[in-house]
Length: 389
Ligand code: ADP
Image (cartoon, rainbow, N blue to C red; front, side, top):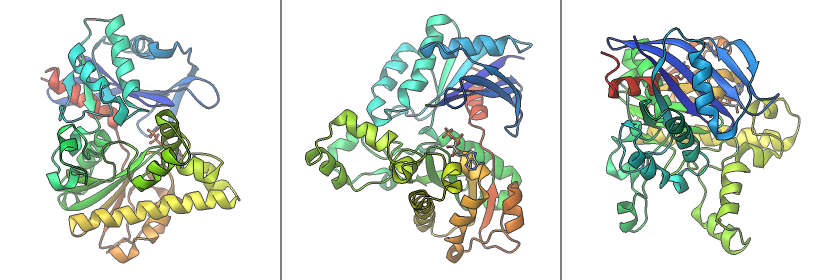
């Protein structure tokens, strides 16, 4: 029974999961994360609810994290790792499903970096570091854009001259591995809602919504880049394009300064002047912190309604990721603004925060579902490499 290591590389963490695979099944044997910020670099191993089991210092060697992590994981597994799967944010127009990471594939993915400047290189760096250290190790890249590949053309079209679309400038949508994980779990937990019209809210440090019909993505709040849509931890979300022109022409910002402003210094952090972590803002007495939370909630609720408009109704609303899974207060605030759509929370269920959160008889069923992007990465890798037979 081969083991597969799934790596989900972000700006402040590397989340990982090791799985054994056989006859179509995938069994989780280890999960954890390396944290680069906070109280010091450390590696944590976690149980399935995200509870910390062990914690140890992590000696960071820059871009070589992936080979070090592979060795760290293998030392704790009974079977060697037969393949590694990676989350790569942007697949662009050419990759609508996971692929084996050849040199040519990596080159075409690197070209997409301007469409995901904070994320694309991080995922690719891990693949490259492992290729250098273990040239014969099979590696697969799984994309956040792929789950959204079935959108109607009208959903993904931008209002730019048509020639730009041929160059790949269109809406894609991200967080697809998370949405795939949640859709699969909802189909088991609540099949009748899962076959209907559902909005899933992935609210983490990056945040987006996905509109699903019968478990498939039909729209999302993120567009050509992971900057679009909701207000996020440090990203601005949807912005009048005229504002970008103003920042360039009047404030004189160049491309690098714009990337820094819109991706790293905006959102909850920029508005509050305090933190990108909504826990800190919820605890704060400052007016700016409250205004940042209010904007986050307002935009999330407004965009749920926008996606419900595209779906022509709403049967289910699912919360996932760091904030969606762990913050009853934010769920409550968003749902309160959606009462007119038929969203009625059960306050006790929302405080407990597991499973179904809606009141009996609520026209819209509300769920909290823990996302498992690492399982999806491992699934794509094992299927593509034929390890699941
Ligand atoms: P990433 O996008 O980095 O994968 P996560 O999905 O892990 O993010 O979410 C990280 C965010 O989740 C943090 O920025 C933090 O604000 C939020 N978060 C984590 N735990 C809680 C909590 N108990 N209450 C509110 N927010 C939380």
